[in-house]
Image (cartoon, rainbow, N blue to C red):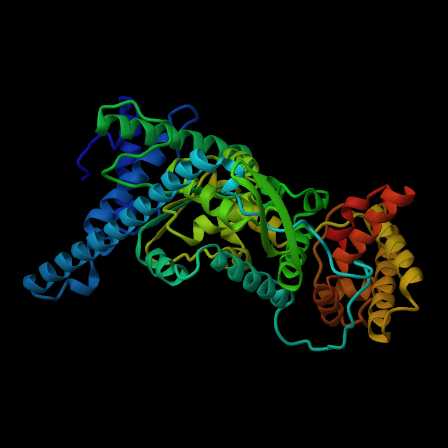
Length: 508
């Protein structure tokens, strides 16, 4: 049992809340799977937070392996071996806790040093910003030459790999030399991942977590502390995370309707950072200064990202507060939270899809190892979330819009594209025409039906097309992003294709 029977609950808990926390702590301590249900209005979220934090504190003090009983591997061993094993586990936990505490002290020291610089030079004198957002020369919507007909590998794997490599490279540049040490610590330290389905539920949970953390800090210190602070006895680093739809502050990326399109546009800006140089002059109170940095997104400012990251790892923030703080510092909120996860974030607040979708999880750097606890709020929604992640919806109107956009694109660029590009674009138009005809023929039939893929392809008359090669072409050339941008530019300049334009990327 934990030292405090109330589990750090901010108020005197009711018996049902104490039972909830006791059972949750026992499940986590023994490494089991638990299903918990509690009526609305019984403080379920607060109980969940307090029970989980009690496990986190206990694991840092005694070690994770030591908390899980019975241990089948030790059942037949002499008592002295069991005792030695548990003492070793506790000593290892102490070393991990010390490393976590030292990381927190370094963050506080950097925050203090930055505040001193601001007091001396002003905010403008300490900021270092990247260049403005720029794209490569030439037509940004023209496809690169495509040669490959390779069917091996997984659709989307190369694009995700490129994106992950670029992100890892830039995140490493934020704090060179620390990534290996941080990765080693992340794998060893206990970590809690809380998942919920909606943005509002994640915000509410973060606010309740701030209430618990602040109450615990006040109780231990006896002094009034800023909400979100934790006590000196136990450092808690909380990281909220959201998709670019909720975190991106770059207008060039935010104008894209789909999350996938925003991700690819961000990839383009990261590639631009590698290929171009930008010079930006900023005037501070200490005189005019010029900062040279790679081109790309103006908000990928390494010093500013490190500062906001240290702030959110020191004080509990919800995702909207992260965006607000990052906007004031002109730093990318998305990479602020990514960098925090890569460091020593102990309590992660994530949407369902980030945890349930392995490519996304791997891209962000979330490792679901044996030291990690995952808590799903409103878990009855998990199956629907999994279905949504691996499903796509297309309407007749969407497909007509995409066909019109593809035909317009083909008409403009036919003389400038290589034969392989033209071949697959024409093949895509053929598929769209057959799908549109199939949809029109299905009017009046039952609204829902399940069919095998081969049967559907035969009915839609696309069984003679190698869809795997076509999908690989679309993925490797980023055709969906190109045609979405091409269509958006025509809407802005000519007012064409207004209906359904936001659906083009998702359909392709």
